[in-house]
Image: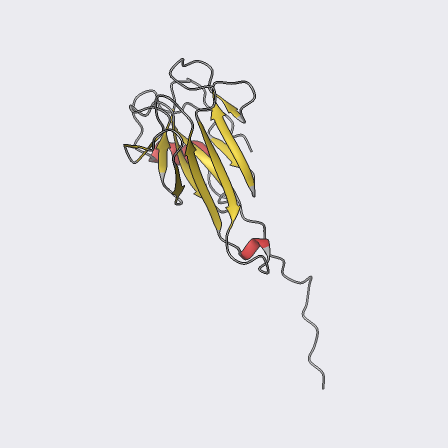
Length: 161
C-alpha cells in the first residue's frame, strides 16, 4: 500500500520576527513595541525621516543609531528556519550604549535576543531586542511591569506593530 497523504496543508514555517521593547523613555506615553523589518534596517533619531523619531531631546542625534537586520544561515533554508542577525550601528555624537558600554560613532555590534541598548549614557531611551513572535497570551503592559524600570519608564499605550 502507498503511504497515506498527510492530513491538512503542508507545514510552512512562519517568517521570523524581530521587535524592540521600550524599557525606558522620558515620553509619558511611549510606544511599547516596535516591529523591525526582516531583512532590512531601522533608524532611530531626531530627524523626521527616521523610522522612529525621538524629537523631544536635543541630545539625540538626527540619525542616532541604525539597526541592520539580516537572515543568517544558508540561502537554501526557508526563511522561517533561518536565524535572525541584528546589528546595531552607532551614528551619534553623544553615544549609543550596550550594557552600559559606549559603542562609539561608526562602530557596529551584533545584538543578541534580550540584550538592551540605550541612546544616551543615563539610559532615558532604552530598548530590548526581542526575536520571535509575541506570545499570544502576553500583554506588553504586563511585561513592562515585570521589568525593573527606572522612574520615567514606559507609560501605558497601545503597542505599535
